[in-house]
Image 1 (cartoon, rainbow over the protein chains, first blue to last red):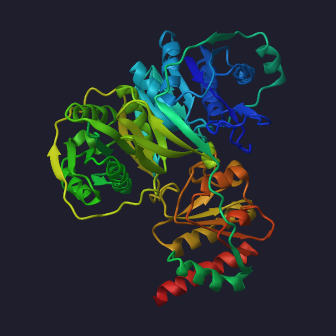
Image 2: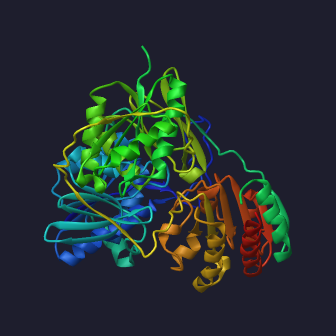
Image 3: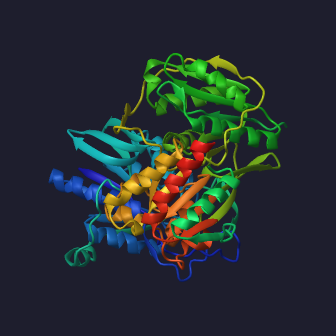
Length: 248
Length: 329
């Protein structure tokens, strides 16, 4: 079972986001970065599939700045076999990233290409299905259950009100939703072993982004409203105010 | 040169249009008015879906392209792309609008890759500058708001559910049937498994009742379920990350940066202190009501209305009062 897992370095979900002076990007100073949480789930799934098969490999690939080496090392410490950083500057759009990844993945032997369902920075949620389309591979996105046997995959993906069942023959693309598994923490042994695992860094020229950011702003501030009272006695007043707003 | 038309993808399920279909057409109409161009819609479904399709005219679709086939009872990504390509071969389009639903979020990127065009997802505002669409979309789960434009047309855009409220207007759409083959398809969609009761998704509900750690125990959720029941069929349950991580509630209910970003008309935050990643996921709700025993909880800083108190007293009283006023009116 050979898997390729695409991962991204993103600001931690608890991070406060400030707009940079150019008005089109965020100020990275003092922001803690982590592996995108959904990518941890994708990586965990690849590791489990390899362990269950008793053979194979897990390669992690990231597109981003040099600092992305940190999350690739974390991935190696969790158990990935080798890592590739396609180094580039700026914040390319989804299609530019998908093209870089498709070019890298297209030439590699693989049964499964895994992604997190979305990166929690630009929230594009588009690269996995784009890579599948570019490589003409079957695809299941936002997957919460995955069974693989005899070169055949059955995936359950989260849809409104239930799970959609998708079947395909390998190779294919899967994007992982939380709940698919519980990602492991790197062990001390894993961290030590990661230092000796291959991490290849290559510069890539990305195609021009077709989606251009004109401006980035802080969301409009919400006025804090009224505490209508304390305890159950305040309920009639709350209901009156909600009806005044035609909400009930 | 006149601006190209705007095309909307109308999602169907079980031989009916989904509510987001009307929203996608409404959003397309808004953009088309900014561009000064007509609106078309396309959809796939089982035989008979064309009758449903005519209803999209009321949301502003001038023409509606329909592909009927028994195989389209379930989501058919490859056939949807073929229909989209067929329509794009006939006319010039400035934009294609998808709903940012589970299906739309799966299909739109495939279309963008096929067409080699940019895609802006989860868009909450639309306009045009010099004949080119400009989209507003939250990033970092709403901690920042981006305005984006496109280097090439058609621009692909998915619109966040509940933001572009479907608006009916006078007018009829012309339904045109298009033959689309169900095969080949690289994946087989076997249909949707629902639980005992098909619950309304937190991203599409107009009223959300979310519980946090203040609920103390998963057994206590009956209190919130009763409030949802009192609020009616457009209400559903949500949850904070803390209670999902604790295994009290399923991830599908999680609101926040690593859950769903929601824009309901009415949002109840109950026993939720208001961590930054949670606030990011619900701050675009029209009205936020907080119920928390801690008057200093950050949730009160963004709530429109609040009650400080023991939720186990306040919430049952609230459900009872809502039922009482509904019975009266």
